Image 1 (cartoon, rainbow, N blue to C red):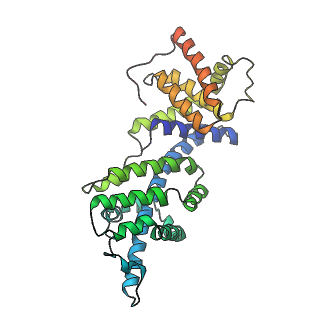
Image 2 (image 1 turned 60 degrees about the vertical axis):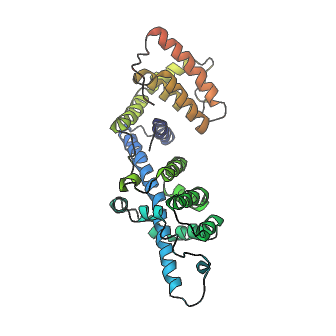
Image 3 (image 1 turned 90 degrees about the vertical axis):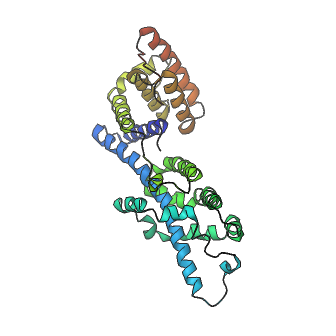
Length: 315
């Protein structure tokens, strides 16, 4: 789920939090980093479990309507139970492994805050995409999947109430929401009728090496802060560190650290990754400034034999 770029952003967030709090506890920052990465998986599970709650609410509403003698809105559809029998929804709601993971993490957020489920459910019921799906007498797995993709893309993901709820819960989730939403959309698009229950419980990291990389980048950047500042100062005439944006300074230090301490990562990858992060998280001119500094440093490191890169490298 998490790429190396996402991991770099997580490390950047940790270092920024440290600079703002003036807390130089390395142990505390390592714990914050691990918690921030783990919490992204919690966000993924909560977003996915929204569909379990929507399914449960739909079943409850259908049971209530079946006990009424008066006609209701669902009577106009050829198959009133089409949504609750949606095969992708069933793959999620009847997934025992997923339910066990939600229980293990004690994620009952939607039970405690059911007003958000009601908001999403109401918007879904009033949507054209739901009406079109229910009115179609045809019934196929592809159609079921198409509905879930559209519901997530057009109703769940852009919902401001859900966004505000997550933002209030954990501050780091503000940056995580787009990543998780993009991942979920890809997941829905690739799901198959015979996908195993584990399909909806993907690994957070590609392997343990990613966590080793994250901790190593964090610690080596922080422990050599003064050294990295001197490197930057030497490549910026009239440099006033107080005038450089905090994020720019952090990204430069991280990039220098990666260039000199991670031989398996090609310098082009390092430079491109940090430029892209700068474009998203810093000022409009940040990437130009960072690129200029790193370009000078890379040329110098090559001449001095400091860049000992191996193999093809890792992204």
